[in-house]
Length: 402
Image 1 (cartoon, rainbow, N blue to C red):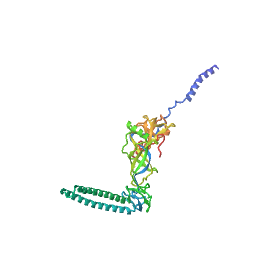
Image 2 (image 1 turned 45 degrees about the vertical axis):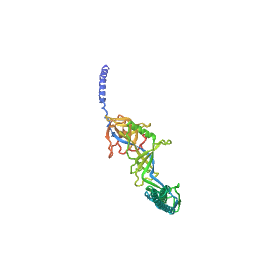
Image 3 (image 1 turned 90 degrees about the horizontal axis):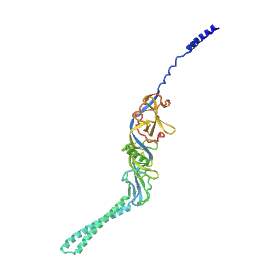
Image 4 (image 1 turned 180 degrees about the vertical axis):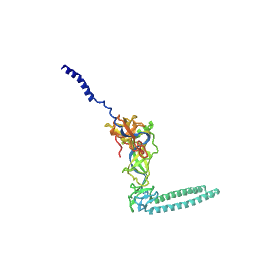
């Protein structure tokens, strides 16, 4: 027994070492790092943008003439086609001119009689001045002859004035258009009696080229713009054409220009009138049409535009972007945007030129992840972050309407 026990005691350690040697494992190898996530980025660059404001408005003719008679009479003929074009000075209505023509003939005869009387008085006055020198007539008779001459001159002037008045009355029997443009329907027909300076217009002529567009702008927005220009953050926009959009959303082909702005603010609306003049050679714009005018408010230099797909919002409306840092790791950065310009947001703060904003692959990343960034392909004619054509303002809380 003792010998057996001795063997066991010497054998157990050996077996134990052998078992552990047989069951032992090599230290685990370090895990392989996952490959970088593929993302698409846009490298921001500063640019110059024109900030615009879209305002609703109505069209109105540049000239309007309501045709009214200046003499009473019966309408003898209507000399225009309703809805057609008329020229300045074109005869629109012919009134019965029998009485005015007779009055003008009477006035012309009165002028001839006054001229004859003046000629006789002139000769008499001349002879009397010669006779008074030799005391052939009294001084009183000479003075009476001179007075008769002055009376004849006055009678002639009065007769000429009466003739001009009669001629004007005769001319008023031909009612003409004072402007060129489109004429509407006639309110009278042949045989109707019209009176001088009547309240009802016979027809209306409107000049549609150019056309006026009257829009209203908020005085509060105007003050904000003035403050931004005074602070130097914006440059005043002068001479930039106005773009119009029709009721169906299509763009009007001809640009307009600002004509003037009203100097009085409507106290009920807090806005003032802005007038735009726009060419209308094809009569595409008609009076009273609803249009939208895109007006330049100011020019911002060194502006930063970030693509809309790269900006995310939280439930509170806070905006942020995912950037690729210098070590190719994702960084989340809060930003502040103000308005939409094309397919990008105008950045107020939080980003600078050279920042690489992730626009694709956002679902596969989180802050701190290593990524492999590929620059987005530029659209033809412009960079991804700089739209070629500025779009109307949009509230920063939601994308612009399409």
